Length: 382
Image: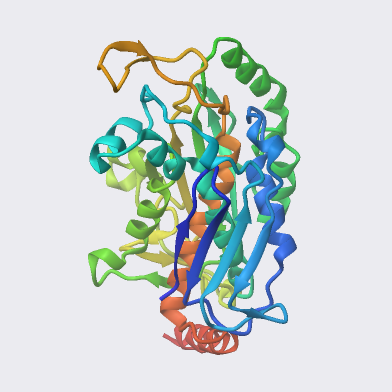
């Protein structure tokens, strides 16, 4: 079983991810992980914290001479803005945050809740996902996350970009808001600036696409092992994500079945690809049927709410005397939808890698590859 845990506070000394069940024998590219960490810090609308942090991964355990050992891998990202012990308690909980509920749940401080619930924690989730993406690349599986909508502004449907994920990544990385249509960047920046001037914040919608998936990752056999369920949990566990859909998603509920389900055809010229020659004229299912990958591209979307910390704070109360006050303000972004596209891509990548390990074994990369090839050979004859 491939899994991970995280630890650390937003302004603590460091953030950690402990990755357990990662196969032995895979060369690890830390520069690639650092590039993804830097992407997470980018995107128009980010706040001053990103100028203080220069996120870099240190691998503390589980690697020898740059290659995974099969033992737990510990990833560390140091916080340059370490000041936890000097920070004071917040007197007034901020609407939309975990402040009030967490303080009551633990009968403790708001500070203790907000430091752990902060989206800063996602830095090591991106690091773990980047490690997983390196594993996926050995099986021809590629991922990308990008922005589809910024607040009420549509950017364009990502599924229409066509071509390869590598080509789409070039477009996304050239965009200030991480869209695959950079022509809307200036308009988007003006929208974000207007919200900043008004002391407000913006959310949006992200799409993740995964290509090269084989048949049969996940299972129909038990509810808690269905891959769509695991993906939904992983994505919904990202701070500020309020909704997830796969393929046609909610639109499927509005249409008759004849306009929803994907017809099945066979193309012998594609028999050697991951889809084994089974092709579909549409991909409304988003690459998943019955909790399992069906050889098509995975298409997943996530809705991110606007950042909860506002420069013009909403009404709150002072915890000490329960009197009405404006909410406390902590330094924050105006819009982090671009960062969210990177984060969601990487939590999806980790769940895909976990399903791959579950299907083909996880002791070593060489064994996984052999089992993968054997399965593909057997499936072509089925």
